[in-house]
Amino acid sequence: MGRLFGTDGVRGLANGDLLTPELALSVAVAAARVLVETDSSHPPLAIVGRDPRASGEMLEAAVVAGLTSAGANVVRVGVLPTPAVAYLVGQTRADLGVMLSASHNPMPDNGIKLFAAGGTKLPDELEERIEKAVEDGHGLVGRPIGAGIGRVNDLLDGAEHYIRHLVESIPNRLDGIKVVVDCANGAASEVGPVAYKEAGAEVIAIHADPDGLNINEECGSTHLDKVIEAVLREGADLGLAHDGDADRCLAVTASGQVVDGDQIMAILALAMRDAGTLTGDTLVATVMSNLGLRIAMKQSGIRLLETKVGDRYVLEELQNGDLALGGEQSGHIVMPAFATTGDGVLTGLHLMAQIAASGKSLADLAAVVHKLPQVLINVRVGDRDAGAAAPTVQAAVALAENELGETGRVLLRPSGTELLVRVMVEAATEEQARAVAERIADEVRSASPPSS
Image 1 (cartoon, helix red, strand yellow):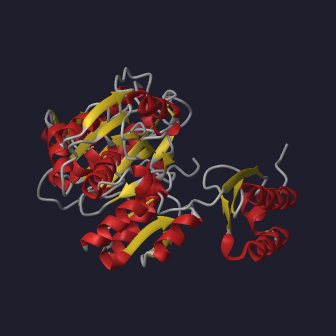
Image 2: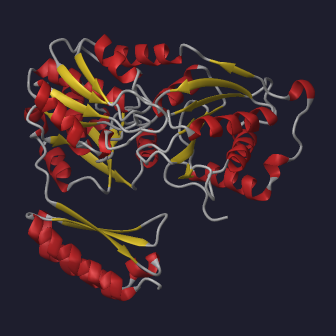
Image 3: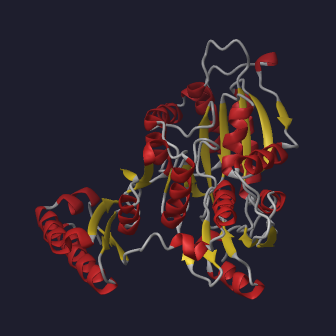
């Protein structure tokens, strides 16, 4: 078995070679063993949720079987966003949580996301221990019998608790705002529109009819054309787009311009700084955030800290520094005062709260960030580490950085899951960015040609 956990849990083709019910059961048993103290005075408690995709029903059954076979009591919360499951883990003081979702991936895929007590994502060390337990088969021996087997219950009002928490988090109501919400036929199809309405907004929901098969299908945060069309057609003040498990939020202005995670972070950071809630006047973002965000934050007197790609690394940096805001260009925004992971509906609420409080349009607020043209080339290689570290490649990067100076940047990143080296270049013009990126990509290909 290769590396089981990726940047956000275990993910793959449901019922395919990797993500089978047997694996789901084994991961659940191993997680219960690793995450729960063996000397606990009470049976461990696990929260299990899922997005609407059809394979989630199958995998939920396997996960519940695995957890209960390890002696854990299980509370099923049904179809809810990933951040809702994390929230309920913390609220119920559960020992662990499991979310079955492949986020923005197409319907045939699915995934297993794990949360520790408190609703936080797992550090690498715990994932490695769970992975080792799965590989060794230790999780499938010495199981309890009789009264030691876990029991299963359903939480029917989990969505209500989560929605109440979301609405209570914003500093002001959203009355007068008309918003189109693309729910991606996913986990936010119910809670997203309800939360926005209860906060005072006029809501037009699209792609909010999940049938188990249509999640992310030409809709949501990866297909923004539909929400753009709806905003223009309805004369809305803005549009919001979530992904399948609703841990992302991207936005669209009244004129149909996309507002990405970098711009949303800038809007929220400035609002929180002015309110005195941006701890240390610091924002956390990943290395993939646009140079325009860095420039805007520097001009506003806000320090920007960088992490590796993945909201789990953003969260770790936030926790280490007791900081208040971080996120990714893709729309994962983390606000630790209210959530332990990226939360798309929470983000949408706070973004609209700033629109309502300031009296400005989304376009005006987003203009604080002047995004530099960004070109990303994925180069297929034979050896991703050798391709990135080759002296000729490093020399090409150094030459490009000298050429771009402070008006651009180069990011060379081996993929964590594929035989790819990602070459990202930002520059003053798209033409310059593409020319520099292609020059470096050619050197990467020469240094480590893909095997035939």
